[in-house]
Length: 182
Image (tube, rainbow, N blue to C red):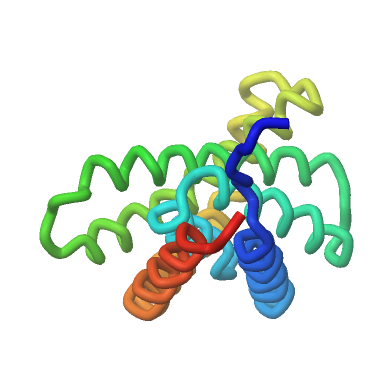
């Protein structure tokens, strides 16, 4: 057997499990507010610091675990796909604004836009699952647009609150992951 480096040492797996628990708990804690929870913001911040793979693991894991409590259904697939798209777009956006001063304001605006994007993606996937015709899809999406606006506002507020404390913390944890033995 070759001497290969383990890409998922125990410390990294532990951090990912704890992040899934954090995201899942935050989703349950704010479940009384429609579409207002720090999940999207935490996943964006994870993408910036930990990278796409870890954010995808935490995003998918937290949706599956929290939907065991909140209700599992076909929407689980659309939620995972929507968060996957948001994570990929967040990574691309992070590359674009890497050297700009005042990154927080860009992330606040971006996180608000992801609230609308999330709702649009979920609506498109649900429309395809239920074989809606285009006019029915438009009505379906517009009926839920207020929830997407709540999501956008919540994302922006959580970004203002969480960006400054979490970015240094996540960077520190990420450095420890890279130094941890295989």
